[in-house]
Length: 271
Image 1 (cartoon, helix red, strand yellow):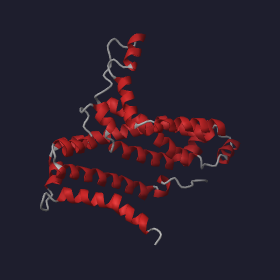
Image 2: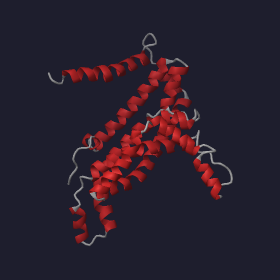
Image 3: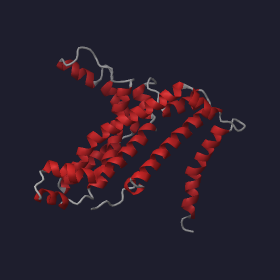
Image 4: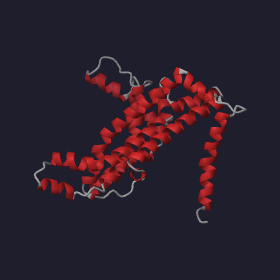
């Protein structure tokens, strides 16, 4: 009984829009599958889907490589330093995503800070093209999504018993061997959870590809927006959105089947 209001709110705000989205993709105005057939039959949509997955996968890898050392430092630093580092990780969330993307425009443009610095030092002889291509989109997305990777890794790393590392050292393992054979395997659930979160958020991103891609890096979210706002083809836009939703749910199902959903929810992982 007490959960009824929350259940009704969930249905109203989440389930109903998804059902409406599905119906829009299937009825135009009568029942039809032509929108889904159109997505599958046109190579351009498959290329956009592949590009979206490639960008999201690259961003996930970069976020993992940069986020893992930070998360490890957060779990090993003294409490006072940990609070400071955590505040620095949280700092970007206090700024609008739109503002952060425009900051990257100022940094990565041909006359931006990065190109001016490289030209001044003589490293390059002409400005690099760092925007309006997949590289600029990946840089912007990685900056925005790295904190999510760090939080997922930290939630698992903070639950690893450090006595296991001391036990490994007492048996003759070097710090590097203890990390590779004890800490790293125990942190893999955090790696999987963070990678899943970043990848899913990457394939659904819109603002960053729209601004840093400049319309030259078509991803699924920008494709949906163009179909709905410019072409006014609500049926096709809804079908593409359903494809994105099914893909996301499929990834979550695979993760849940392999490792268990409790890791994604950040449950206690103490050994």
